[in-house]
Length: 255
Image 1: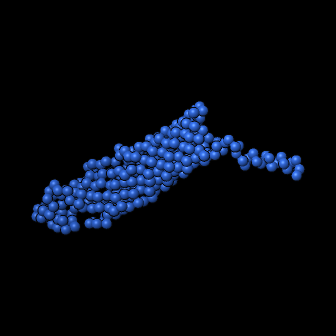
Image 2: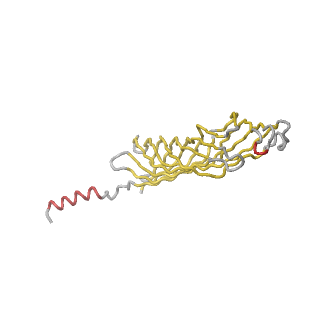
Image 3: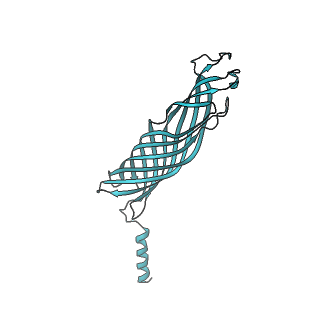
């Protein structure tokens, strides 16, 4: 074997084999914290409703947990990872005023009825995201980072509706005034939607392999859709865009 071939093989080994004491670029991560789930751009389809008089769209603080597998790019302060996250179940509400014209499903066959509707939408979210981070080393222990992610959201919903009603004579009083009567329900349903995130945080090296992260992120969870209610009038539907603001404490372990 020629000296040139030996030199070429040695040079190739430098690029294909990491030094014995160098850590692997692969890591695993786990995160947990608080998420504030909210909804925006609510679309409630109900031809009998003429006003929304109350709503609870945000300040739903719940637990969020996440796990990820990541890779640090060589010679760059960039990390890429695939993350799964699950968020606790919350309830959004919509209080409405409406009028149901006769025969109103048989409830008010002569003159119709006025109602106050109280709607509760149960919402639970899971996401699978591809995240990217840019690390900015502050000192040998501390590193700041910013990141962004994109992926898919799995939005699970179910909903119920109760109402108090007022009849106009000569309709019979089938439901006593002031009594909450069930009018509609939406069974459990899961829809998928595009999800995105933006993150900023700081990490501290505990050992050469272990780092602890503290981060804040905003997550767009896409749209949820209850579908059309299958009972009574079968023409009511809730849709909205869901968001999360999260504070996370986590750990990353490099192999």
